[in-house]
Length: 105
Image (cartoon, rainbow, N blue to C red; front, side, top):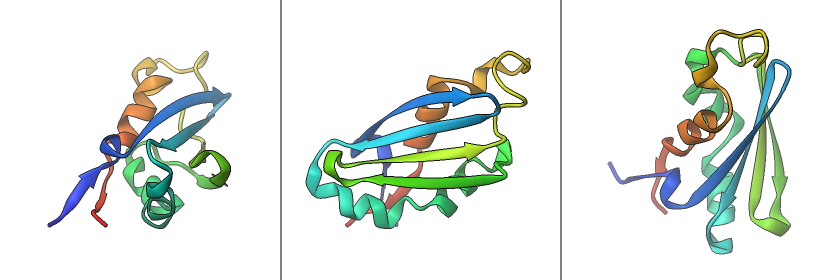
């Protein structure tokens, strides 16, 4: 299978608001952006984070900066202040997204 991990094509940033997380995925190269949009869908992201059981994943496209933002609902065990599972907050979520493998162009 001819696949590549997202970390070879993009970097990511994570934020949290209560029980929801958002992850921005930013392409290193503008020319990879359209291909990433086709490959990194909300459904693929929801499946990749299946263990966190997101109730919804929304994607917002930001073509002017070759980025997209994913908002994942109900993935933070009640939020950073309520959760005993601190490992799944912040940077670890963006690192996990970057391990998603996609088909090479």
